[in-house]
Image 1 (cartoon, helix red, strand yellow):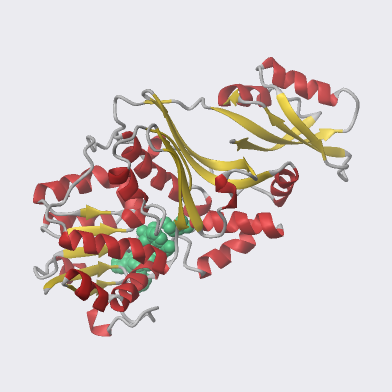
Image 2 (cartoon, helix red, strand yellow; image 1 turned 90 degrees about the vertical axis):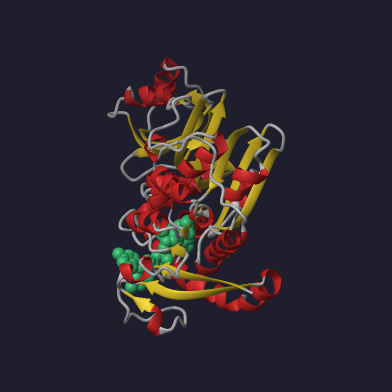
Length: 425
Ligand code: NAP
Ligand code: HSE
């Protein structure tokens, strides 16, 4: 029986899940793989804090040196989160000849080039399936299973916290601030939940997925990012009335060498496959020139679903004859052959508060028409207390910059723009 000795950096939601899963399948691993995994050290901030798993107290340490300088530990599981000190600890581990398995999309998206270079230098493994979409094996699918494809687009629900919040807002009309606390209690949210609700978590994940899908580095700085904090129950209920479901989507599209990468709230028709992905579930809908449409769906967050990806990486790393790495030039900067387009074409849901008098509608249509933006649907919602009336338009497809320019020309004495949400089909 082969034994590998490992250390954990972090034992919070994910680390506890990894501990529990390793213990619960110990016998299966021994039987199936003739492998025994021994956890020797667990780094935490506070060794006296109550833990959500039965890790023995004597394994806990607050000294990273104790773990990283231990030559018996050949594999490090990083689940502490944040860019630093996690990146420096992973670099130290890799340079010290230890394989790293991480769930940390922030550290990976920002420092992937450094981590991969350090791993390749020592011929050790760097594995990160858990960093994107929790239990869904999207990294493996993009890196291996769909290698024969040119991926044209990816549209994904890749943040469990915001999907959980938006699902509750859609179903019960709740406010996002009330639901966020529940997402935190369920262990879905990031240590700093602003990363979820501002869209950064999804942007880090999209940067990783798009780099793998397009075989070139797509840095986070190239991802247009807009979160869910400005959305209102009114937007969601108006969209619902028009047959739309609101999701925080991560979108990456490629045509020849031109790419667009963006994270923002998006209305989808109720019939779209992603519209029925609710709660903490994630999904990735993609198109490859050979495989055509495909959707992968599963739990995107939470202790055991995330541990499923981490433990599978540990088992793979412990048994693979040779570690492999993505083949694109993994640099800090964007791949020079990719052209980034920030003037993408979309339909738009525009909610206005407008003066309720003759001619206003014609003026609004005129301001939009000046920039070649045409209206597909309109909805008027009763009458507001201040005499202004809520108006909702959905446009036909238009370039982002034309829509922005048209909105700037609106006369605020007649109408104010309350929200603008992109619509995908
Ligand atoms: P968490 O519950 O806050 O756990 C973080 C752990 O790291 C805690 O045990 C903490 O110690 C330890 N830690 C943090 N900073 C440390 C430091 N400077 N020195 C020593 N120990 C430190 O976070 P989590 O939810 O498990 O997330 C961990 C990572 O997994 C993040 O990168 C996150 O993005 C990723 N991830 C999370 C999920 C999810 O569903 N939660 C899913 C996929 C990926 P104490 O316990 O003593 O405070
Ligand atoms: N906070 C993240 C989410 C955890 O909600 O998706 C999984 O990466």
